Amino acid sequence: MSRGRRAAIVFLGLLFAGRLNASEPSLNHSPAPLRAHGPDEEVLTGFVFRDGVYLPPPYVVRGRDGVLLAGGLPIAAPWNPAARRAGRPGDQLKGLLRAEAVFIADSDRPLLVLPPRTAGVALLRLLVPGHDRNAAASDLLRGATPEVRAGLWGEWLLKFEPSPEFLERAGRRLEVENKLEQAQANRRAARQRLAMAEFPLSLVALLLTAVAAAHLLQNVPQKSAEGAGFNFSPGLARVFKRTLLLVGLLAALDAVWTVLAAQSGQMRELNPFAAPLLGRPAALLAFKAVLTFAAVGLLFALRRHRAAHLAAWWVCFVTAAVAVRWVLFSTNS
Image (cartoon, rainbow, N blue to C red; front, top):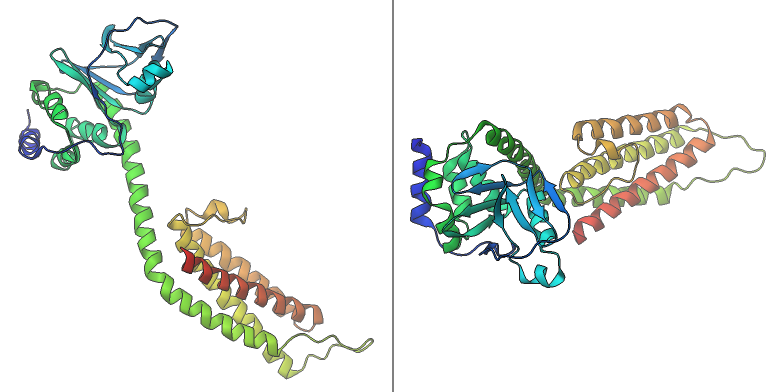
């Protein structure tokens, strides 16, 4: 027994109190003998311990009555009254195993099932070397019942020696959980960044849309008289350049806001070309920048044509409307 594991166990013994998380179903029970019927089904996921020994899969759920067998030994019968009344106790056991729940069976204690995403993962981290055992112990402590304490902190936990197969399976399970937790942490951090950026972005958006609205209203493209040529005067050139500048600024605002909102999980990109890039902010910004520069460059190259001025006016109008939509999004989020 390593010193780190002993410290974690002592820490747990001193601090245990409370109940299991209310969001998780109550999973402490005594197995009840039932007559099995229907076909057996093997399940290759989940973790089962019996009398301090890890029993590897396959685990057999015998018929719909749900008698669980591991290593040929009966581990559990169904315990949930609702599942019994519905005639699907076996489905409950299979669901827990497929969700990677942890079953702890002891010959002189009630069967204990640890929920897969909370206490189950914490126990695996406590048993697998290389993890913060004090943190794992704290996770197990978070709302544990006296039954959990009795089922966990027996001699088996102090003397447990992980087998290579257990280390491999538990390592894969913890790797998946670590990625999920990292993704959740990234999402929380992104939401904080968005919350901090929303106010200044909203101010910039309101300023740009006000300037764009005044510019567009003062420079509505006029239809030339029939047969008259297009006169690209110096004054019209200045108006055209201002229009393109506003388009670029509004497009940049949209790109930054899109990245922040996408990272926080508060939006879905409808552009089928940009949607695959949501997980790569730099690539998404580069994609939007290339499109904006290409559009502005093409309009500028065609600046001596009336159609380019009309197109630039409408592009500026649309990007300003998108900025207003972002402000409304920020207000309602």
